[in-house]
Image (cartoon, one colour):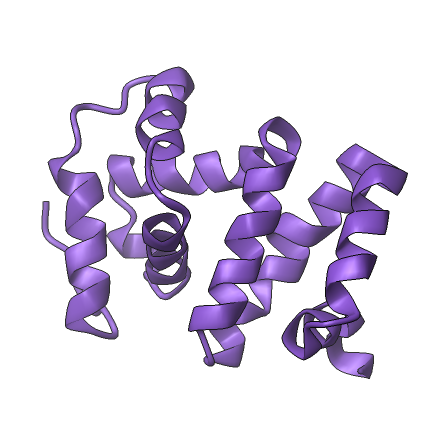
Length: 138
């Protein structure tokens, strides 16, 4: 599997993990593979996927993107931890901004007051999380 137009060698290395993964034939296979990954590695993968061109999204990449779309609904604490790790490690705004649309809004919608209280508490001490939640109006 060839990955064209990546922003860094790190992105290529992270995406190679997906390419080398056993066939991710079903969502359950993908979930099991990515659920076993530590949050920092998962955050690196999420960041790399955000920078990947649509034309470069082979089946393994697409399966990983679908995993991230389901994560807020399936594993809310892991999704919240992922968002916090991406915010900690990434400074590129176009890479960070999708966290709000793709993870945080889904967390708030799917898990309501329980998640709102947690995120609000964390945002008190995390300026990057506050900026993310405030969107363009912050």
